[in-house]
Amino acid sequence: MHQLELPALRSDDPLGFLAALGVLELTTAALPTEPYLHWKGPAGAAVLTTDQPLTLDTLTKLLTSHLPPTPTRTAGKLADAAETEDGEGEDTDTADTEGEVWDSFPHVPGLLTRPREDPTAPNEALRMRVDTAHQALRELAQSERETGDRRARWFASLTNVMCFEDTKPKTGKNDPQTTEEPGSATVRRTPVTPLIAAAGQMTITGLMQKAVLGCHKDPRQIRSALDGWRRISDYASANFDHRSLGDAHTNSEGKPYQRGAPGPTWLALHALATFRLTASGRIQAATSWDTTDNRGALRWPAWTPPLTTTDVTVLLEHPAVRATEPGTTRNAGMLTNLGVSALYTAPRTGLKQSNGPLAASRHLWP
Image (cartoon, rainbow, N blue to C red; front, side):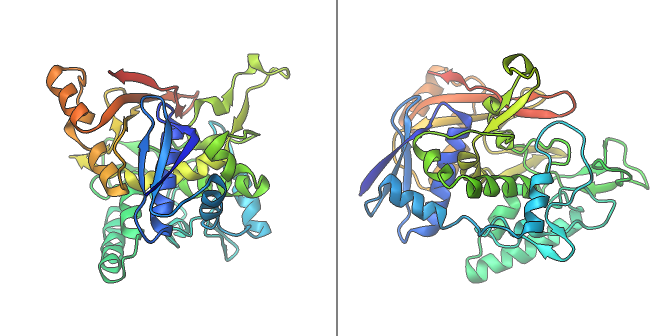
């Protein structure tokens, strides 16, 4: 077996952690033998283990093979128009217009090009009527059983078919409002993964499109995601990275600004299938998502034994990793036996009118 260190993807950084899981997801799909991932200790770099030797250059080439082609001009304009921050904007459906559809996620083709159900539906097409979502999952699950199709796993990781939100039909440029009081005018829809903090007209499709466009505009983005991030202006890192947003007082023009890194963000979006969605009644839950705080927080471990994608999901869901008080003697013993070297959390921040990016990580244990 061969090991390759990814120095820019560190275990104590939420975007670095997610991007490393994205590398594992893509290499698992591309290589004949499952790769493994582990970390060089607390706050250490990710290490990818494969049955064939890889360098940063050959790994970059392999990852880039999953990048969709440059989109058409119309689709490109749509992706640029999709909002990724707290603000106002036109009602833009980034997935489909004038018959042109750009699939920015060929890893699971067609999943992010689903049209909105009707004009009153949310901009986010994956916030679906419950019965529609259940039927879609049944069809994808059958395809998975028959052909090994990956879309059922991804669909169930992006939209939660186990619970619902009562929403009022859309009447203006903003998404339907969630309401606790169901009535004749409300529609029950599935929520999307809490790892995505929707703001303005943001959608999962729009986030993926903007990350893809950023990687096309700067061909060094995917390589730099592995060894030293390259930040660009007017890009917001899909709300995974608090450093992508700058305050007005730190800018010579006196205005807030964005400087995100499309490369690691594109990889991090491929990690979403690692986090399974569940529910308790009408309360949504997700692997590694801590709901102790109102806005929630990402919570994750660093581990030393090399793990496959399936192993990682099992570890993330282990009771010792999710324990409210991880430092108890018994729990600490279980974490050590599991090969966990550290636990971290990154709370969701808030913007003026919506949820914001993940904050800087905080060391939970040891």
